[in-house]
Image 1: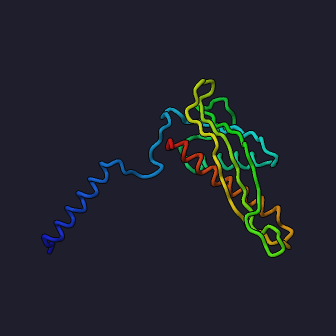
Image 2 (image 1 turned 45 degrees about the vertical axis):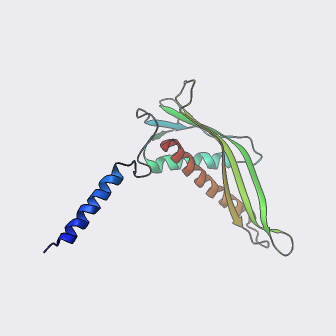
Image 3 (image 1 turned 180 degrees about the vertical axis):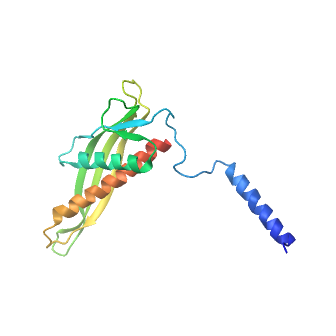
Length: 176
């Protein structure tokens, strides 16, 4: 048998849910500030103003992968036929030690990548979305005696690229 206390509790719960639903709460990733007619997106290979080779390629690939994961747009392989184009420039790359061993050698390093990004319709004068100065950091440890220093550095750059892509795509889609 259902008691009055249980009914009151159920009514209170329903009222709370209804109130929260009307206060602007929603699921992250469900809204977009972008025009609804954008379906096909081209991710132009990023430019690279840094001395670190291939960082632009890794970032471009990670952004494309993130778009595919999100399934909001069709990612196309050329700008012809695109409703919008994402362009960008890697403007900074630094790699520096942040902790040192007894011998004075770096044991942990930080990678920082900075980029400017823009999302626009082909041929339009005004971009839909622009973000300059994105900054991403990742740290990684190395074994001073290990010969795989460059492999770990490349892995750290790949991780930064994934983080970069997630933030860019979320910011772009949700308008933050």
